Length: 254
Image (cartoon, rainbow, N blue to C red; front, side, top):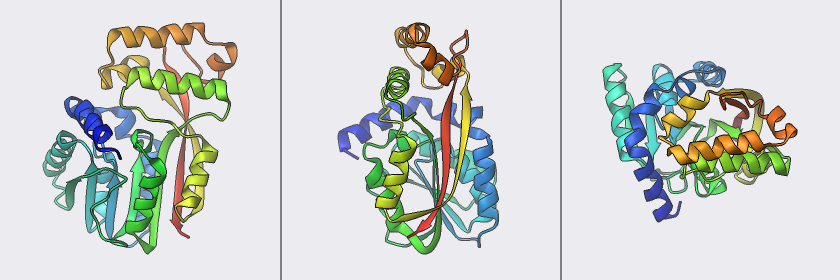
């Protein structure tokens, strides 16, 4: 990640760290249940939580792992994760400040590499995936979960625009084909794909990132002026709540 972009993202999320620990969208979900179910079938080992945010992957992983390393660019986010882990008695969670594109770990040192709702913030998603592959053991598993963009250009443009208005650190929601291509280029073999729909309640969605009121108004204006195709795909509701696509990839080194 470009240093200036990494610093910007870290500064942007520092005041919002606690909000991501308490966020129900991040703290729960079928995708998180799926991650835990996969991890429960694997031998206890070392788990990388890449772009840990509020630490919810780390908390789910801790009972099944020898050690969990929670990595994020935001120092305050890592402080909150460490505090929460300590309060929950999860002594096997440690934290490390780093960007996904430049991981400070030796090759093949993790048994599981996981990332959830983080990759759309990376300045260089393919580079982040290559780093995850580099640090993953030859017998390891990777689990990548993220929101994804529609392939249709008009739908894609709408999503990227409202995401950027809501959160100035947003880089890009990649579409399904882009994700598959990037995983293959990073030398991952995709073993399982689960696609889901994720409803976002508007008021909590903008509160979590402390979206400026004029940006929130711009989002609502775009929603109200959107075509019927956009309103239908995103299931835009009268209060601005809407639904987007997400995907979970379970992969192994190719």
